[in-house]
Each structure stands twice: as structure tokens, then as C-alpha cells.
Image (tube, rainbow, N blue to C red; front, top):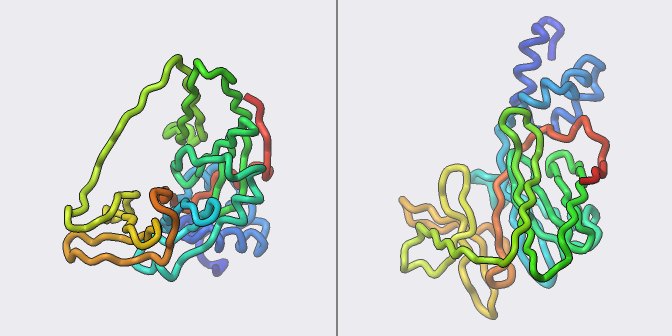
Length: 245
């Protein structure tokens, strides 16, 4: 940007740019690097880039990120190798939730939670021990505090377990599919059964009744969809930082 543009205007412009561009801009000048890595810029950065993280099984756990817009079939990136590298034993790990651009995994064997910023490919690990007793059940929740923008992991341990069956659907009965999530526009993301217990992921447009396939196939009942947006949280943290409970 030109030196004739006031620095506060430059800052506002950069807040609208994708994360990849900001990471490159850090090497242009010290002033931009200090700005992008400042706690105030990180807290107020709100990207217009939204994505869907799709987890499913296809001869093992798979992870794919797709753009949450009309280009979704073309804007598709496999994250399976990144997840395998990040987690010690991916088959025994699961996604707790996604919130504010962060995704939280829980590794059963290691008894730890891994908070991942997909856009930055940076992680923070938190030890979350659970009771090794069949009598007790531990459930985990994940979110980001609105006041402080700090990631929060909630652990609840209780005696006896219960199950809650929630069945929400907005798909017409003539469409043989199961609801797996929603795009930011409100359109449902659905899994449509095929042959040999395979399913195809698609977006259903309720007004035109059009079904757009996303080019992702997997095992029956394995699809889960987590929306996330590009953020800079964890940019000022060392990668693979480990915190005890």
C-alpha cells in the first residue's frame, strides 16, 4: 500500500484480507508485521472467508475443507495429512466442536485436547484427564469467550449416562438424505445414500429444490460438518504449545 494512505486506513483494509495474505504481508515491513501480530489486531480481525470442515470415514478418518460459497466443489482442500501429523493417534480422536474459527479435537488415548486454527495450521494442546472408571462418564464442550476471546474447554463428569436423540430436518420427505450441517446462507448440507453403503455429500437449495454435489464420498453415517471462518487466534502463540490442566 502507498505511504500516502494513513496507517489507520491501511489497518482497516488489512482486517478484510484473507489470512494467507496477512501472513505474507508480515515480511514486507516491520510496521505491518507489528500490526498483524498485535493482540488488538488479532482480536478485531474478522475475515470474510468462511469454510466448512467435513469429517468422514473412507478406509480411515478423512478431513476436507471446502469454501462456504458457490465455488465449494472447486475450493476443496484435503486436511487429512495435517490432522494425522497433528494428532498422535487420529483413529482414537474426535472433534468436540468448532467455534470462532477454531476446531477442538480430543485424543482419547492421550487424554488431551488439541485446539487448532486451520487457517494458520497452529495448535495449542491442553491436558484433559478423565476418570478411568466405567461408573463415571465425562463429556467435553468447547467454545470461545465473547468477552475475552479466550478459548474455553468445559469438562463435566457425572455418574450414569443418558442419551438425547435430536432429530432436526428441513429436507423434504421425497429426498432420501440425512442432515449433516448448514452453510452460512442457511442451506442444509446433506448426505445422500448410494450403492454399497456409500454416501455423497451435497448442498440442498430449498427454493429451487436443486441438489449440488460437493465431490466428497464416504462411508454411511460417517459425515459431520463444522463451519469455521478464518481468524488470527493463536498467531501470537508458539506452535504445539502444551498446557497442563
